[in-house]
Image 1 (tube, rainbow, N blue to C red):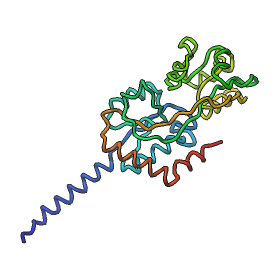
Image 2: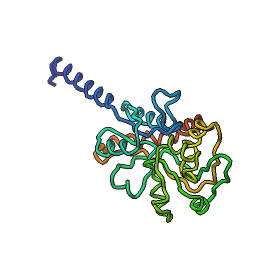
Image 3: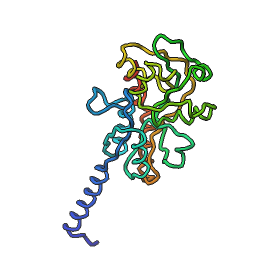
Image 4: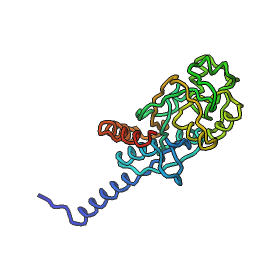
Length: 244
């Protein structure tokens, strides 16, 4: 039986170790808009619920997470063409369907109409529509849903959440349609008052997604990590930690 020279064995071992280190060191960007308490900036007290979930999934898949908080449209444009970026807290819509690789569902979000403090609640689409303009977060998937329900685009006003809270407070929009978990804290921080949250209108699944150029094998690792995080209770624990 022939024996390989020590130098060959050593070289092969070093090559294998280097290859493993390169794979483990692969950095994946985790992108989201600034949506506290779901997605927070680096200088805030906590990373945010969805950032914790997404970062853990990336780590469990054997990669290194790099969080980027930026406006939705900019984040989507980057992720669509990237081989190493993911969107978190992302809704799957007909318009987005062919543009992304949909990896896994993380959780769900409830959507409702929110009106200014002291006003009556809006518990239906008809009530909110009759009250005037409807505010939505810029880049939000709820725009597509509202249009499907018959709301005209002229009745919708898009703006970042911080601006939308000001617009609702002074009456420039009759209501805001979105997630109470992200909008109410901003409104209260600005005004010191709690807005009125109507009944749940519908719920949407939150996805972690990538562009079509993202490697399928890496996407499968992320999906497997999310599945295990659901099974071992990690995701529920994080959601409970951020629940008011």
